[in-house]
Image (cartoon, rainbow, N blue to C red; front, side, top):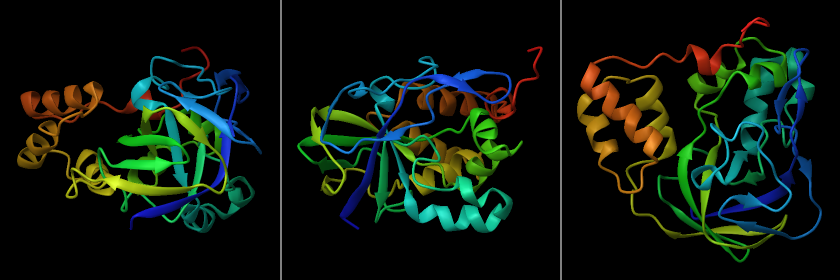
Length: 232
């Protein structure tokens, strides 16, 4: 697979999410015009929690439209929520999933050059977004997480653009494989060491892998995927 299509381009501003009013910019709205993208993302886009979202390694979030039927089948009572933009993605893509893209892939999209930086590590705000208490864990376990792009060359992107693969330095490292390692085959020391050696691996992922290798234990995910109590 060396091409995908941008079905929709979306941006959003931070706003209250859920009954507790946690701030999030997950509710991205369709943009019907060409839009500039730079190293921190699309013009007009925002992240509420800049410690865990946004920045150069998470400038653009992409999600595969082909995942929606699986979610609808798994959670039929929430079927109406599984639509383009449901996961807070900037790019709604057709023709590529986590199995089709690899770490450090470079893709020409419009006039911008984007590089795959990492898969999404889902957080508890997805539980609120879908009103499903364990939605973040479901996303993590399924591998249907979406992914982030760095912006190597700023440019202009619009719906209808074709993403074209221009470089694949790590063909053995699809995001599906990375997800399986991080969340299922978690203490495969040989493969963890191989992942840590990949040039350009985000510092947060490198720290995670090195901590596992040093401790022999998987990190605690509860603060990331479990919705905080109102008093927290």
